[in-house]
Image 1 (cartoon, rainbow, N blue to C red):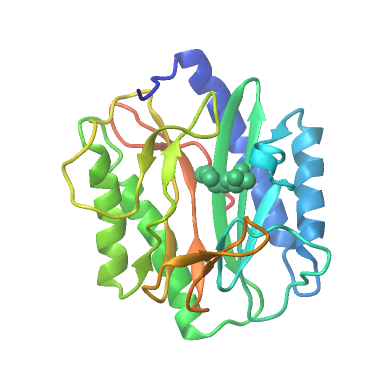
Image 2: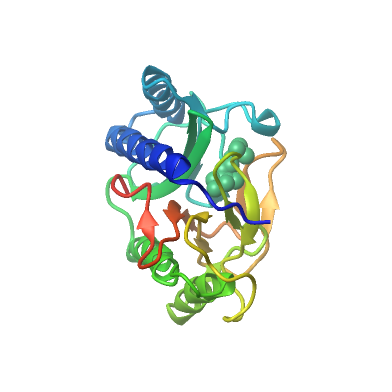
Length: 251
Ligand code: MF3
Ligand code: CO
């Protein structure tokens, strides 16, 4: 069952999305060479709590941090660490969620630290654009898999591969609600999108086709190949016209 949010819930989600986008923008501007991923995590947690919100990931199934910080061959769910200091040439994906007044929002973005090579640059641009290809299909009456197809087909046309083992999701009263949103597949399937649905769309894209690997910390997902991966995510409201991107800005 895909929840339809009330006007009151939507008003809170709008506020929460704006707050999260502002906080992530501040975190990303602090993501410079020489800074550790734990410092970024501490900054994010402080800002979230100062705003009267709660980190959505901390404690979720035992996850130990506010952010997921995934560098280079790490795809998602990298755990911030004092020992992981950013270097020029790193591709850093940061995923963050918060809950306030009972409603969750979730977003992720990727930046290049210093100078990165042309493949890394292209992977970053293609993944960012793939999210917008998906968002452009979020319109009343379209089917859910139209979003998935738009993302996957765009990524493949550009010569990269989407991660198949992890998917986007509905969001609202919980971090993860129905439906699951794969980043691949044929168009025209699944439920029709209705105004008031809220979706966290999150393409994870890599340079190689190998399946991902779960590291021994039981969280960090890496590309099996050692090749690069990138992640972008927005929380999006279905309306009667175009999608409303609740976490807009800060990407
Ligand atoms: N954006 C990710 C997701 O929707 C982040 C979850 S990390 C976790 O699954 F720690 F909360 F699991
Ligand atoms: Co998510």
